[in-house]
Length: 414
Image 1 (cartoon, rainbow, N blue to C red):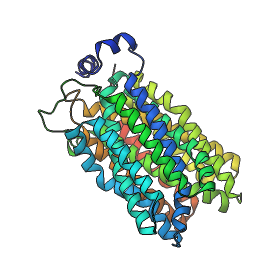
Image 2 (cartoon, rainbow, N blue to C red):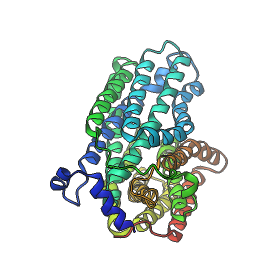
Image 3 (cartoon, rainbow, N blue to C red):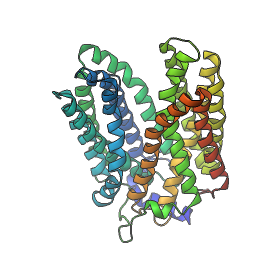
Image 4 (cartoon, helix red, strand yellow):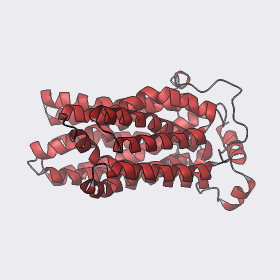
């Protein structure tokens, strides 16, 4: 059934000229374009990230208040995700995708003009609305545009492009912040407007479908929750948010200073090792999941993260920490494409052009919750029981993800 859907999906989603130009094992042109747009968006995000807390402190507020400017973005993303899912179904992915970029661009420009802390907080919160529009639409676009046999590689390529952008962005952002704390926000706004223009031209009339399935009800989060494979994917997404956006960034720098007695600058080596391992493994995980199914890559990645999280907590040298970080990144890179591809398989199981916006929005919310709760929960554990126990929280979730994938049915087989 899925193979028949794949054939119908590909023949309906790509016009005759594209079929002549694009080999069957190469990502569609629109997906390659989305990867480039994702890199540019992440580059801009990385430009703003170093300046944001410092800019907030310039309004004479405390450290706790300044940190809310960072967290409010994630909180609004979670709150607005269901609305974004419905917008995708009503307006279509290209409009929501480009609209989200424009909203974040305007929010960033407004942040640059903020005259007080409350204005900055409000403008940054508005950016979270556009961010969730953009990410939900992206997930739906990749599901529609990439054939199932290339879905793992497509999600891996997107994640890789975004990751490289977040690595390169802070370098440029640091230089701009040295000139003016408002300059990075203006640069981010300009980058996003260009990205929206390019994406609009790329996706104009090219949604990857001819007759969307709007006759039936949308694929909801509750519907997919009945599937063991979706529940396994949710655990992996919690793990991804908890680990990548939470524990690594929150605990590793402090661990380097307090446990290894090294300058804080050395934590950059560990964080770079995480990113390098992930970037190297993403294409491998994507191809593996497309050739052998989603379960093996997702389970293997979960196992690697579970083991390396314990290693991180007991590392006694900087070399050991960097090695554990590198392998932990590899685990994330193996797991992520398979997890996202499996969700795409389930969304399109009923119909290759089913409206999966609500389900994809719920999936995103779960990952965002992990990113918000993870740093706080792990920090509380560290205060009570030490760093080894804090990193062990990652291992517990990763082990649960591994068990769930071992018990889940395969969602894709050639």
